[in-house]
Length: 156
Image 1 (tube, rainbow, N blue to C red):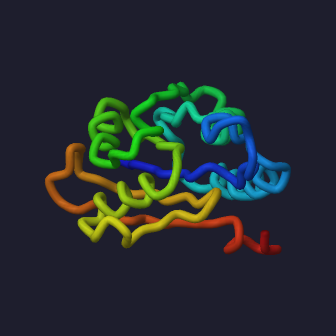
Image 2 (image 1 turned 90 degrees about the vertical axis):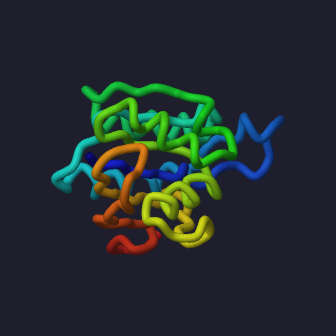
């Protein structure tokens, strides 16, 4: 089973509430660059699970545009601050892609690796793909790769 994590792209600094912060044009551009590379690798999500916060929902929408046959669900679980709950929502779906926020996505990635909670921070528009035996975890996952728009050819 594969578990993928994707942090939302760069969002507005100001909005009526944190919930309503939208992706900036640069955030969309960086996500487009990242997604151009993701569609070329031999991986496809089984489901897209995203936080309902606007910036994460917009990020998930961009992913869904690249993978139009993959179901997409917004869930409050990914907006909460409990990365331990992520493995329970992910366990119910084949090869999930979780779209959300820091520090909880990074903490979940660290949990998958059996590392300290702060050991796996994800940059904005950062992606990581793990192979797990099953969820909930019985042994640490294997990190297959991670990428960030700033690592791609041409820079951010």
